[in-house]
Length: 115
Image (cartoon, rainbow, N blue to C red; front, side, top):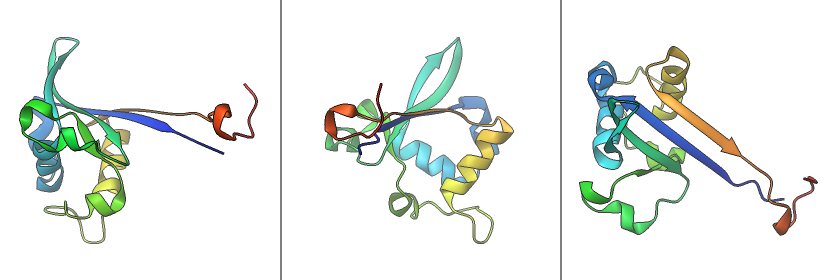
């Protein structure tokens, strides 16, 4: 069964300093500045495999890795034993970060779910 997923994550520019250095560096490395609903935000689509074209300079950012191995390099300012992924989950619940996730079963490649 195939289960693709897509994820969008954003933080208001003015709230970025509230985040630990690990998340701030993650944002600097991968996100791009956008205006959403009149708010200046840093935003990215999270993916397990970042296309090579998004690994360049700031003009092509906007896709960010979400795999725990890729996120392990971001640890500055996190509590002992916490990963960036678990910090992000907690920040979403607190409303510091906005995130939207969607997953679906793809019946065209062996899904067991009927649509």
